[in-house]
Image (cartoon, rainbow over all chains, first blue to last red; front, top):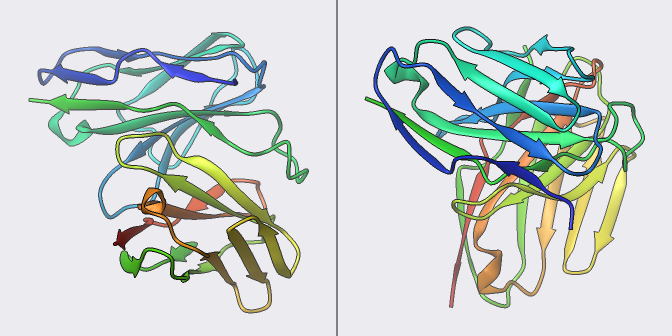
Length: 117
Length: 109
C-alpha cells in the first residue's frame, strides 16, 4: 500500500520556536507538496517541489521554508512560529504534473496539526 | 481571480442519493478532481474529469460541463461511512490545483 507519512500528528509549540514538519513518501514520486488546511478555506499551497533540491513557492510561502535533499523526503520549516500558523498541515505527493490523469493524482499524508501558543 | 464554490454542508439520509455541486472559475482548465476526507484523516482521491460528461465508479459518479464551469459528485445508496467532507479542485493552465473549501456531508439513519 502506497504511503505518505508525516512524522508528527500533533505538535504544540511556542511563539518564536523553530518547527520542523517531516514528510516521507515510499512511491518514488517526483512531486511533493505542502498545504495548510484551515476551516472554511480550501487547501492552500505553501511550497512544492518537482525534483530533489528543487523548490517552488506556492500561494502562501511567507513564514515558511522547505528542504528536499532526497527524493522521498520533503520537510517544511517554520523558522519562527507565530500564532497565525496554527493549522493542519498536509503533505502530498504525485508522480507527474502533466495532463495524464493517472499521473497527477495526489496522495496525502494524514496531516500534522500544529498549535502555536 | 480563480475561485471554486461548493456548499458548506449537506445532510442526507442513509440509502438515499445526494448530489454535491461545484462551480469553478480558473485561468485555463486541465481537469477537475474530487477527493473525500473523513474527519482527522488524509484526503483520498475519488475522481478526475477532464472531458464533458459523466464518469461512473460504483456508487459514486462525477459529472463535468466545461462550458458551464460546473461539476457534481453523485453518491448513490448512501452509507453511514460516506459521512465526510468532499473536496472539489480544478487544475488551471499552469497545472496548479485550485481548491474549494469542501462540503461536509452528514448522513442520518
